[in-house]
Amino acid sequence: YLDTIEQGPPDAILGIAQAFRENNRPGKVNLAVGAYRDDAGLPFVLPSVAAAEARLLSRGEKKEYAPIEGLPGFIQLALKFAYGDDCAALKEGRIAAVQTLSGTGACRLAGEFYARFLPKGTAIYVSDPTWGNHINIMQLAGLEVRKYRYLDRATQGFDFEGLLADIEAAPAGSIFLLHACAHNPTGVDPSSEQWRTVSNAILRKGHHVLLDCAYQGFASGDAEADAFAIRLFLDEGHSLLLAQSFAKNFGLYGERVGTLSVVCADAASAGRVLSQLKCIVRPMYSSPPIHGALIVNEVLSNAELRRQYYGDCAGLADRIGTMRLRLIEELAAVGSTHDWSHVKNQIGMFAFTGMTAAMCDELTERHAIYLTRDGRISLPGLNSGNLAFVASAIHEVTNG
Ligand code: LMR
Image (cartoon, rainbow, N blue to C red; front, top):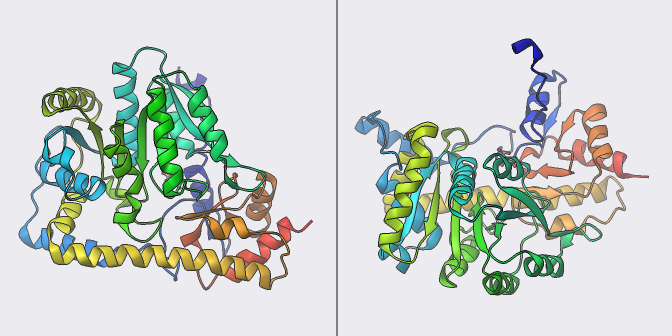
């Protein structure tokens, strides 16, 4: 039967990273995957993370299995990081949570959970556009995926009215998947006021909310400020799930560390929900890996490392913000008269340029600059060494 199996399609993001690796051309540039690089184009381990890891190793980290739900100390600290140190719901023990294989694993568990416990046929609404993997994850979990308006393609800005209309039009009790901050791929986030309006609209319709938080700390440089939507939705009493990733903000990409949490009405309900999450996890992958979770636990439980961490994270966000501005300056310097103001207004790891798929293909084929075909650029892929080259290539493909 194996000879009848057809080639599967490459992944829209990671497939491009593979094509990049396979090209031997000197000077090739990888702007495809949202992974931090330093100004020399190299992967970067946060100093606070390296220090925490050294402490773990010097203590002789054991390689025991974690419980099905993950390491309890890590989970508590991770939830405080998201929901706030003084979160009442946490103190009341009414947030059920498991450690996950980063944000993807958290979303997948959320999908499975919804598919099991919400009425059959409940659809999940994702932003148009959204992170490509969201759609596959939720479809594979058995949910029907529909889109809500998000990006106004005429201005590359926020289609606030469109989002509100789609919240209103969706059948009551639908699921809305929202990006907690630093929307991927658009870099377009609601303002605090707009978040409040969105929250009210969702509450009015009795929709369920899955917040995907992959970039806490990357929107403003301050992880506390970036938790605004999470804390608002918790306070407003939503039917809320949170998928939390430590891939980007702790630079723990390959460690696969995150959480999925479910906010319940009381501790008894949270206990039942946790038991069901464990029933999903055990036959899927038994229990999560421990190393990355131990690192996050070490950073967040040690006051000095934690302080250092907040500085490290601000440093990452700062370099990304600098690259955003320098890209726009370089584009002007090479003579681009195109309006790039939307890129300036966006936040987070990406610039959503508005370039067409054909322009992206041209950048890749002619200049060996790799980016996703939706025109998204991973800003930390830019550095002092390649900025001018990238800007003139973008100018060339967009000029005319
Ligand atoms: C991205 O959007 O580039 C990242 O979230 C990496 C991934 O897994 O797609």
